[in-house]
Image (tube, rainbow, N blue to C red):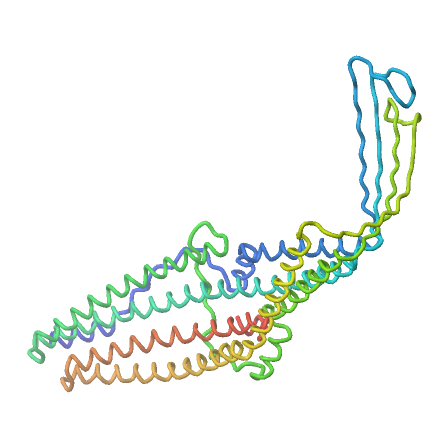
Length: 432
């Protein structure tokens, strides 16, 4: 009778809730916004876009504007020096000069640089997009790790609670003579293991929260706001469509194509060094003893033509390096085009498999929960052994943990596919 009363009290006892965590929380959207701006690779990619944009402006300007140089010199001599312009001794001599140079023909280098700068700018924009999605994928991985560790901690705590309840039941049955002493010893060992597992999971959660805080720029740990646990949706495009979109608009493939065009243009620019160059130069010179010149002024226009014949092989070395860079860029582009089917298929099927696995694991959890309930009732009635109960409890813990990991593995698989495609597949409110 005492054992039965104890059992009923344990079943009716409410689970003491853990205190609310006082850590700051961020949503996934907020974490993505904050972390992307702090990611060093993304900051570097933004800088590359700025540099490429200025190179593009420069490539356009050389067709319209000359290069202009202003120069002014003032000299004061002691003792007096002879001024060869005024033929009189003077202490101060001031010279001002303006030089404007416009390249009429550089062997096609202007057009080659225009083409190269355009390809480089496109590559920079595609690289910025790739860096943004890569940073987002890393942030999502960290965010999901916090949520997964939090749920796994919940699983570990439930395991401890079940072990404590079963240990109380076993002790009551041992006292009543319905079970042997080894039952309580087995459950005491299970309780110890459960407590150790809970401690390990608490440590993992603390570390994951610190990593999330680092990514979003917080001085300490940051918690992740929970996400919905609805089943993952089907992808809104077919595998052939995904392959086509990745090949045409995927960031890494766009970068490879643009780099090949830029390398080809750079090679053509080096070929222009074998052709004559023509430049028009205007020079204005003024000389006086003060800055407001009135003694001597002169202006000249010069048309210069040069034909480089031999520079000890430096031109040939530069041409060879440009040819190698062009061939390497072509090889990279061709390799990526051959790999696009593999990469997209792996990511696409990875999401599909993860989604199916999560659905299967949800069913397995239901089965494991029902099996544990049956074994628990059978053990209390003396119809099964402690080993059967422990096996059912272990299966329930594993099924619960497996489902948690499968759900977030599905989200990570989706993030990987989106990184390849360079776009979101679902609206923000639906996906997050």
